[in-house]
Amino acid sequence: MSIVTVQLGQCGNQIGFEVFDALFSDSHCPQGLCSKRENEAYQASCKERFFSEEENGVPIARAVLVDMEPKVINQTLSKAAHSGRWKYGQHSCFCQKQGSGNNWAYGYSVHGPRHEESIMNLIQKEVEKCDSLNGFLIIMSMAGGTGSGLGAFVTQNLQDRYSNSLKMNQIIWPYGTGEVIVQNYNSILTLSHLYRSSDALLIHENDAVHKICAKLMNIKQISFRDINQVLAHQLGSVFQPTYSGEGSFHYRRNPLGAFKDPALYTSWLEPVHAFSVWKTQRAFSKYEKSAALVSNSQFLVKPLDMIVGKAWNMFASKAYIHQYTKFGIEEEDFLDSFTLLEQVIASYCNLGF
View 1 (cartoon, rainbow, N blue to C red):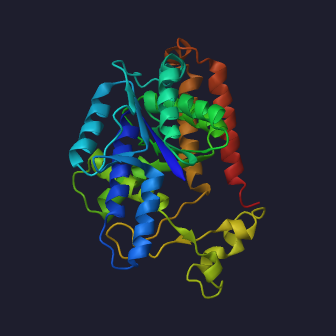
View 2 (view 1 turned 90 degrees about the vertical axis):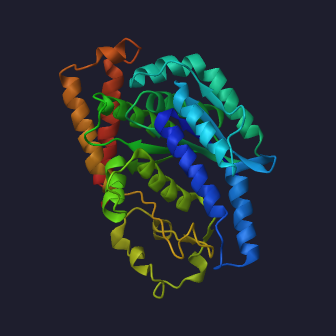
View 3 (view 1 turned 120 degrees about the horizontal axis):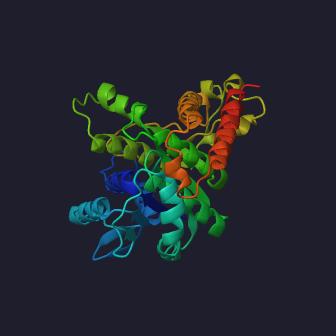
């Protein structure tokens, strides 16, 4: 089962490179904790999922790179090729010479329709290389214009054309004190559109990852690459091959048994689906033991409420609205986004009932 990754915008392409590099590095790490057969099966599964046929012995990432400026894509292609370990396909990228100006409306309403056919054709060609398509991983940010606006447009098209395949959007939540003055507008428009068209949103907060770099890794001068490598490590640990270990555990003897306490979960969720354990004998990367937690919980309520609140304060004073209306995003679109996200916040706040 293969996954096609779609890297959108500067953020999406930089993180996408680090993700593939982390996956490749992990699958080729020396292993002393599992059998040779288990290790070979792990490597084969990783390769089938994220890489296609080799050219001159070099695996090719199952990915499509999209940006409205060429600089980052050229850098990403070059870094992958010069690594000599893996690379992107020769015809797997689409870029232009005019960016989106950090405007969601420009990415969604202008670049999206204008380049829809070219982008979707690249994705279709990548899909056709898969023996069996499991789904799409769309990597994007919310703060800018290309990743957010064009990302929402592409996700909507993927839902229309590949409705039976999983669409998961990996979203970078902007810094609370970001440099893009309209990032809250871009964020609410992104989230409201993805809520309708994506099957799952996997969210990483820049502020939280920054704290990991500073406090856990003790990095003094934190760069975006440091942050991206932490993100890639977390994503790699989630997406690498595992199998369900539920059948071999007894509830009382399971060291994770405390997580199965029904009081931790909403009352309407079936206990069997509340907490799932997936594992593998093979160590991830260089670590003898590691764990990753993917949680659908209330942790997002506070940051989401803050973004909606900031966007609403700007909207109430009509700040920068003209930058969106001139590209076809009307005030009603903002109101629809506010309404939907307020309902999402209310639903998460009521999870315990």
